[in-house]
Image: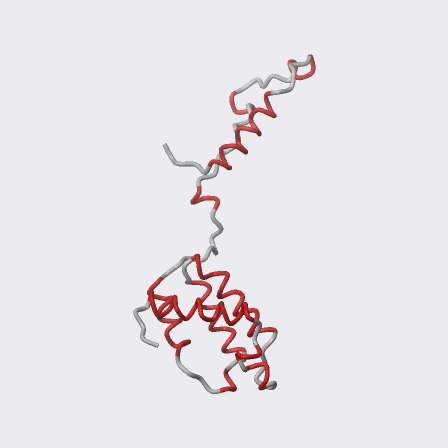
Length: 151
């Protein structure tokens, strides 16, 4: 038997019970299908594989490390907050382990919205919100631990 997520089973059960809960009336008794083909089929229950969107992200530690390790290297100031810098976070988020997805998304959003190469003050980490500095530490520690890197 295929394992079905509880919520999918619950929804299917409610749908079946709702369809069966009506009393049989004269008009519904007159509408009995004449052939098997005319009988509506039961609702299909989607498996976890079928219900997962085709563009779902897939964590990949090897790809994560390949993209993450260059982020530990010092870069030119002009790179911080640039489109290329933000794109690094976007790509990293697509292959990151689940526990780092929100951290990376927060950093990506910050560098996209609040940091600009044309505003040097915005590039200085001392001017970043505390939560962004904390996310930076979390990501750096995760990269060094999971990718066996020395900082």
